Length: 290
Image: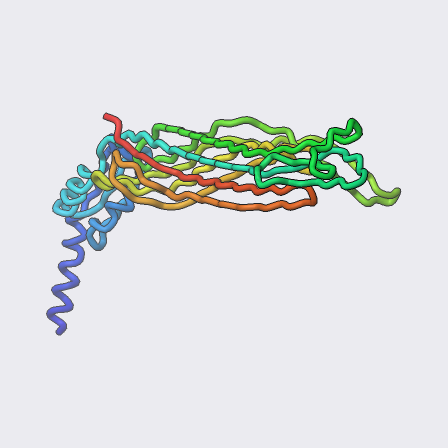
């Protein structure tokens, strides 16, 4: 046992003597990008660090060669990518109904009759239609339908491993009222703030061969036709945050949303129905630029 211990003590300085320092310049990648991937190749007792686009490697000749071979596969030009995001919105609304309005001068044997035909009404005295100048009545039937089709598309170029952000739109003024209770009573202050309304996305892609994995957060804001109590435009928003993977050059559906509502109104002289359908979808395409 003593002899074996002495042999190991003699070999340790010899092994340490075989390790040498080497500086390796980087051509395309940064120190932060390659060191995590090269660290598992460093032998016990060796060391790897870097600064100013240079690697500082300490190890045996054999281990330094292994690290250089691994670095050759990593230190390649970053691939250029084009990210395209398509955000679509389809809205369809329909309103139907009928209503009656007017003045009737009632006399003897006067009847108001609404036949089965939509948009018709009759006022009769006895068996004849009343033609009194003091009587007037109007009937209206309506069936309206509106379709809104919106397409928003953005694209941005980014290198592999980088981060991309793009947003286009406008700043919308919104009224702001602040009420503060102070020593002298209530103080009301009216002002205007601006909210950015637009479309765009944030993305961080990573490549592995012909497959891409990326974190992406698209947004799609639109102004509505209705207004709130402060007379400010209503903003319709769409947000999505996810991590997806797919092949380069193929469209990937990130997600979507949809809503549908039906309403019915009935009064003494009118009836109406309404339908609303609103659907949204988000698609992504990543392609490599040559």
